[in-house]
Image (tube, rainbow, N blue to C red; front, side, top):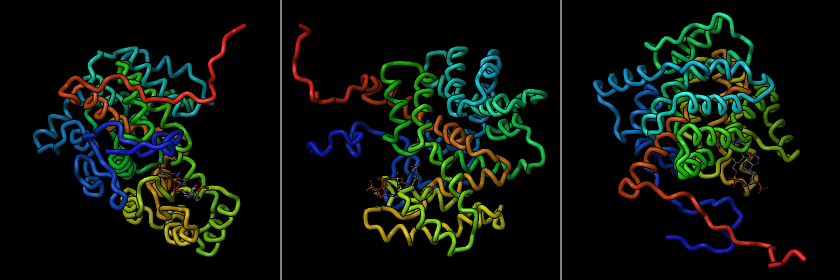
Length: 382
Ligand code: AMX
């Protein structure tokens, strides 16, 4: 199946097969597929239906969809005690750290120690938790609307956030698309792998997911979406010549051109294509959207001048920040929390598969890759 040579050592296990994944796979040309469906075909479905797909491996029929939504609604209420923990966290802390603490708090307060039940409960509680994280971290703790469990997952978040002067239906549309596009990305990405590794020691879903969120918070992983929008803001123009000069300047300064390139994909990420199409529909005249539209045509041309760059095309992070900003979510520091919210579904489904389905239901054993001793000759204390 695989020949391992010394060239595979100390490269972060890249490409080395370690397990199987039933929720999604990624191809270099078409990107991620959820349970066989190319992501672009799922992009306009409700997040609830796509969560159902990841857990059940089939899209729901209308009856199953309604029952599943009702089930999530019945699980949505947050236990008492979450808000007092959030009220004690430092506002300087990154929102991803708040999210990790928030998930841990839910686990301490009402984990039931059942993989599937805990995964479903966490998915159902995420919108309210995330909305409260925004509100407490920003000090907007007065008059928080009560959680309206009759709403969709996205609607409950928007309702909790309760921002003024926004078009909540467009915000809901952008968030729903964002969630569906980001729910899963194969088995080996760092946050998913981390979540499954922690779960393999039979820690709870909540501890595993908090670990996964910590992994996601790194600037080389999930936090790239924050950096990407900060990058777009820095460009500050949609003039093609100026954008090209900017891209060349970044490359000369040995800085990454954010929103381009990928470890696996070798074409434009379909998740970027979907978000560009959505942007053309809702904000074609937005200044930042105009910038990324130009960047999308200019940067691949410049990047492909360097033969070392395997994929000069747009990745998933190019457009998401621009869309989130347009609908009223202005602070890029929060963008990775949406990524985390989405991934709770994919990581949760993969943990449930790995703990309860793989190896005839026995689950995979505790993770234990091999590390080879280096520069350690045997010695003794005198
Ligand atoms: N800008 C500048 N340099 C780039 C680049 C980009 N967009 N894409 C690749 N390169 C460079 C790499 O840094 C590497 O340089 P090196 O030889 O000096 O180490 C070389 O080109 C070859 O890289 P690669 O094999 O094409 O890609 P990779 O798997 O090493 O890296 C990635 C992939 C995403 C980290 C890289 O393309 C990158 O830094 N992109 C910009 C940052 C970004 O948008 N990140 C979000 C990615 C999406 C995601 O996974 N969330």
